[in-house]
Length: 431
Image (cartoon, rainbow, N blue to C red):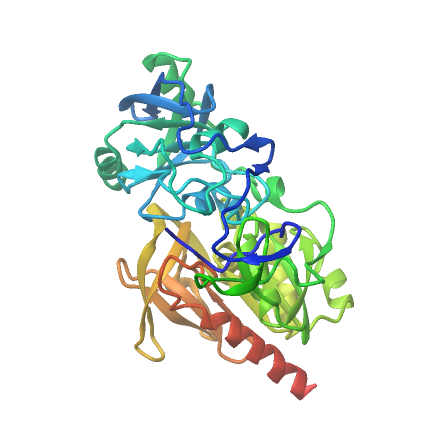
């Protein structure tokens, strides 16, 4: 199971032995039913816009959902995937053969709600087995109105998408095959600004007390440590030394946690916040977050970031933020055939030759040949040679296409937060 440093809203603390068994717990209105949660079987269909149809069994919510279908090759982390705002408007298929075996919990979320339209798996584990599990995957999806389908050949689906490319799809427990294909073909995805569906309405400061950004640590049996009511143990967050503004295009919570734990006071602003308002705050740096959809459609963000670059404030971007930065610097983006989504993507640092195993989730990439001469490509994806990182040659500006905050096992890319802190400190020293 993926036990990552992702400390969400903590529960009322108490001092207990860390190997104590937790009591019953309720989250988001879903009460744990224990390891043998009842699953009501119902027939379901996955229909692709090109006419291919897969039949299986429904789980989670009943109903019909449409969106762009994509696949993720991660073996764990399904709860983080479900709640990642970058998947807004998409149907996600997992290539791992069994999903749901460790349940779900209140801590391992990347936002307050799931963002996928539907969830596609080969086999659902009906018996979650983990001490951190609070409720089953099917309960989690049912409560949040997300339909799932299991029992299909996800290998065949993945090969089909790799061959034919990204396409629209429909998951339904209500429609017949012909109607489901028609729904898939009528689904709207291209040209929609999904960022406006996930960006916050108002600015706010993230976790000023440091309670939500504490690092989850492995407990030692029999050791007396401060733990929450579920038995989770955390290290205290670092004191803040730098103040930055983070543009939230659909930001994952673990990015916020790691920024805070690296000594950043983080003021979060909506995606359409003008550069003038941000610069008026006199931040030590600006962060550009991940998010959903086509970066080329976010023309308001291109102009904003262009002004921020001209101001010479330190800038760091991840995923969609990386793409927006590339566009602001004069580059172009293009849509990948089937995207990069998984926890085992190899990336090479062209400056050091070092190889990192990274977590990625994106359907677009920057065209390296379109970048101006004062911007260098610093990292490349070794699977297809696409741009995985860039930096300005003369300004404190850099970005990565992948997710250094993710912890799929290796934490090879976590140094970028230290690099951002160093860049901000050097910029402050010159002022």
